[in-house]
Length: 119
Length: 152
Image (cartoon, rainbow over all chains, first blue to last red):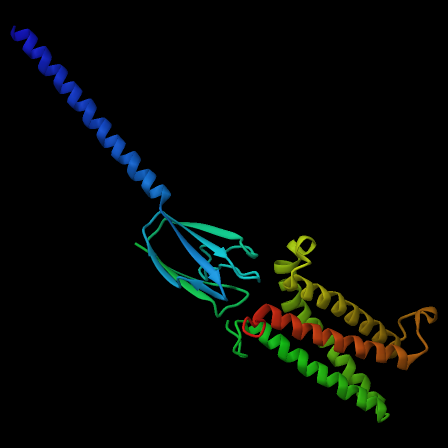
């Protein structure tokens, strides 16, 4: 009888360990997926970036979409990212992995500026 | 660096359009020098404009054209952004090349006799007219590229 109780305890313990591991692993996968899917969008319209300034979490993919009828670029002065010329409805995406402040501008129209803060 | 005409254009574009307007005025002044028979001054004025114009072509216009127009020119020629730049590029190339040819004929003995034109006034007036067309198409390019309010 004692042996049965002991075996049952061992089995329950093992199940507990396996279940905990599965839960932790699942949480990590979900978090990773959440981080992977984090995204933000910036519209280029009427010679301006909208929103002009945004704050995002590390790992966020930021996408710029040009809705103007003239090409624009997205250029970071510190050379972290630089798009090619974006024609109407063209997009440019960049994943911000490191915390910090990232200024950017349009190299064709330098009055167009924006800022991304990554936390 | 931001420009100084109050448009979204950069400093290079604003400086370029300003220099082009001054050069256009200098060419008109040069034409009047020829009418006044001050040919040495006329030659110096036209030559200076023609050669100085190679700088903004190399530093501002060609890089812009190569980066922003040329990659999509074939498929986007129906859009005014590309069309006006293409027209300006073709006219500008013709004007600069014709100007260099006129300079070689009028100012040097480098070209063989068969390649030298005789009707000076015709070719020089053609060059001046072409240059003015380039200037107008350049202003048009500036408006289309950099002035959203004027285009509405």
